[in-house]
Image 1 (cartoon, helix red, strand yellow):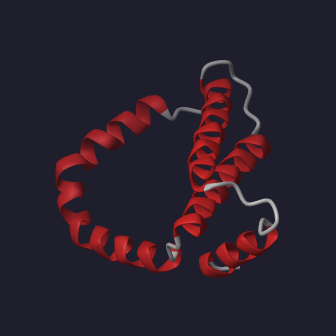
Image 2 (tube, rainbow, N blue to C red; image 1 turned 90 degrees about the vertical axis):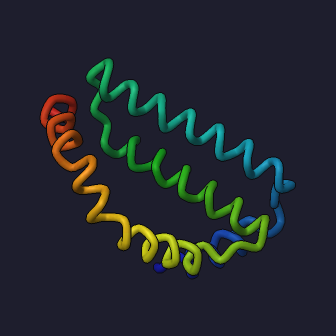
Length: 111
């Protein structure tokens, strides 16, 4: 399922229980908090639960899609535009941050 299909499906799924727009934003905050807790459990307490982490990531994604639906935003269209803008900047980012980020990944992302 692509982004547009997912957005339409979620819109249909939630049509009878749609939150007001501000509720979609508050819902995103709640889901981001749950994702952060999962990452904290993983990184700080050693509870590596990839299934739960994936589910929390999906909850955040669906909350973002819900916000887009509430405000009439075509997420696929704006995502494509954003990716095209990023492509132009990647070479510069690699020069500025590539080595530093590689070094930090080597230190922080040890398994």
